[in-house]
Length: 128
Image (cartoon, rainbow, N blue to C red; front, side, top):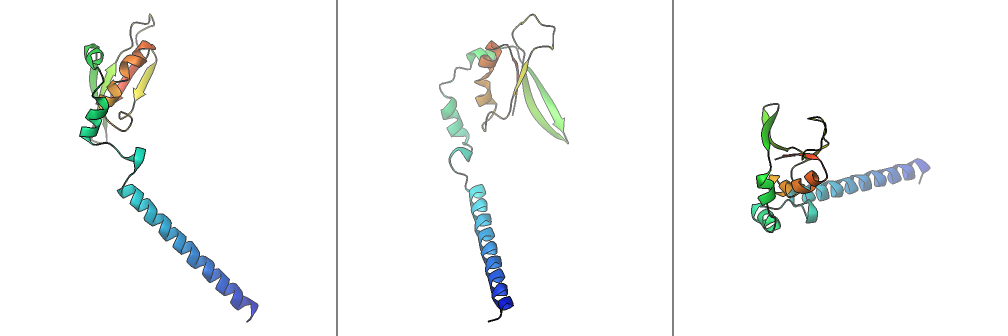
């Protein structure tokens, strides 16, 4: 066999392997997206209530809160602002934590952390 025929066969084999590996990778990614596993899976409402069942929300419920909506291209994002305890700083100068989406859950889960951040002197914005 001529050297160029061997080279052509080797390159064709590499191309077939490349396509096969790409197909397998795409199949696996599609499977993981459709069927998330472990920590990637978002809990349903009943599982979320189970996670939060031992949480005492009485302190959060008694806090001064301001609800507002952030509009983005017609979609409204419901937010809750909980101001920091009086720190002696000028109004609006306190540090602020933005707790996003309840760490994969929702506002109920984020509300668990509001008293902790306020105890450290932070204002808190949570949204869902």
